[in-house]
Length: 426
Image (cartoon, rainbow, N blue to C red; front, side, top):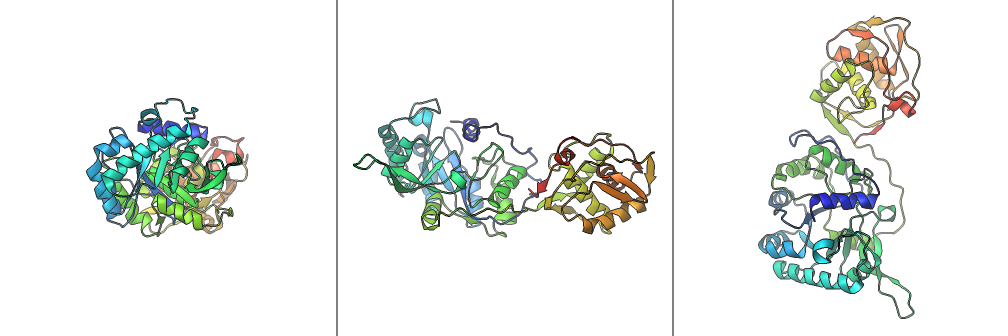
């Protein structure tokens, strides 16, 4: 199974195509910083010819953080020394069942017999035990039919990690074999789903980039049980180090191995609590604001996204802050923001030229009044202009250009908020 196949399995489980965040440079800043709402499992799948993720393990070890490695039987057989060292360092090694390699099936809809699941699970667990000298308490699967649940429970696994979500994104009890009267019962194993990922990509990082880690941070801030899949990459260590230094450690994330998370789930109430929509601050460097201002200032039709990381609502807020500032910051932090309530049809009867002082004074007046909502109309130097015209004026003054007020079209005048987009940070 390749990583592309893994992402395809996630896409099928979600019922939609994966729309990952745009790739940015590994040295770009991390934008999202927030505490995790609940328990987080850092999961590393290892199969086929994937390399040993030594740099990731070293980065986690340096910060006292644990990962759960999910390995196929063949990968474990070929990398026994690495797995033994990893277990000795406090990480967990679980079994990954490959449908093609272990069960010889290619179709996701197939449902092997319980005896087939038991056979491959026993075989894989035996190899891992022999290589690590420790117990194997977690099993991961691309699909989870009832027969796989029953087999996992019968073999005493604590945690079952499928490539799918669970109801309310909370762990649930696995099914056990039927009792003598023919009725099924619940077992002790806990099925822990991926978490509330909503873009079709599932829990695996779609690529190693700050943007992908920002996405994971955003989900961890809103999910009580979240898995984050870390692809094996020998060059990922420095980025993991930075994520740990800037997010995981200062915000005191509760990171657990999968088997430990299953134990926590057994002790946790099954009552479904309403998960708040937490504003996750997004830190945008000053260079990106210049790119956004340039994209906005030179068009008669506003783009939905002036940069890959910013929508128009965020751009408006940020450019107001930058124009209002007496000392230019090195970055701007964004939180919850909503687009204009409606798209105002009013424009000046003729083109107007605003002075720099008029635009900066308007920004200083507007800054404390925004309160997370972009206004539909803005007053600048005696002129009433639309939010789109005001945004263009703020962009031009920020770039040191003449703030000429001209007709400018919103991305989608008939959509809610004109197509500007909302933001809850990251």
